[in-house]
Length: 440
Image (tube, rainbow, N blue to C red; front, side, top):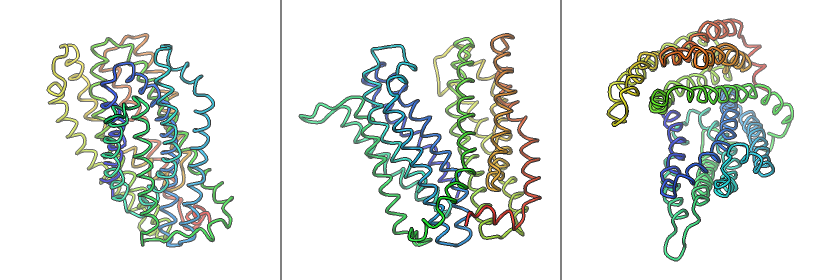
């Protein structure tokens, strides 16, 4: 169940890489314009993705119950919430487009390209709103390969269509940067159509909306109450990451370059740990939905052990990365390579810590305790780690080892509260609490 989820996350990043590669020949101005516009949309898509991930646990419980009407109702509730957010974000970009552009860039020469890209790419919000909830339902059913197929289908379409829309063919001269955005819209529209067709014809659980509207208001309210902290958690972590990146830029250029080099690779490897933890949450949620609680504690313990094993493999991969990173990025200064060697022990250790806290966080979410996860992440990042990080960079002028170590320290701080909360709520969890999570 886990490996297609991990590949999906990598392919999502791949779609942005395709646009970057195709727009690159248009020059630095077009690349900068796309970067600014995609930053706005990526943040909003991240919120939608977080909402869909929250719906995934609700849908997993509904699927575990085996009740077709509850699955349909939960799917409709998730769709209403995600589409409402998508429409809100779409209108926000439409109305506040120019204030946002002027806030993010002072270069007036970029405004026309930013406007052209943003005016088209905003339609992906609506398409993704529908697709992400459909993906959440497939994941809840254990059919994680179908979303993977949807990405494998649309990525070549995105590449080919975007190329010809940007550069033109025959008498068609192309439409430049907006062609990349339109190519993404067409590809995501195809993905949405594919997913909806698969939902229509899949046999595992037939969706029926004839009874789904009965009590839908209550279902939407409870559904939103559970998943909103997940979106808030994503926003808090994303904004915190932005502050980290801003503070990293205050380091010497050669040292900052080392962080820039290694970060995308570490983010890609981390997706496999996250995917395993997410698949564990799906399995636990299905067990809760079926009221099969006798083995719940054993299932959680097994999930933790296997996630740690997967994390150990990712640490080994990180070790391998540290040995060849200078070959991947040749021709840089000795100071940059020294910085990479200095932080290597820290980023090799990081997956083990992240795996442990991630699986506990997913257990808490599966138990419906999404607010507890938000509280732990907010306090450790915004109250403790970020002020300490800023002090180390701006006041102490600390070396890259101690600066980077603070990001590891943030994760260490989460170990005890995540484990304590997960164990506490798991011990208290019973049939009554399981029933309260079903929303029927």
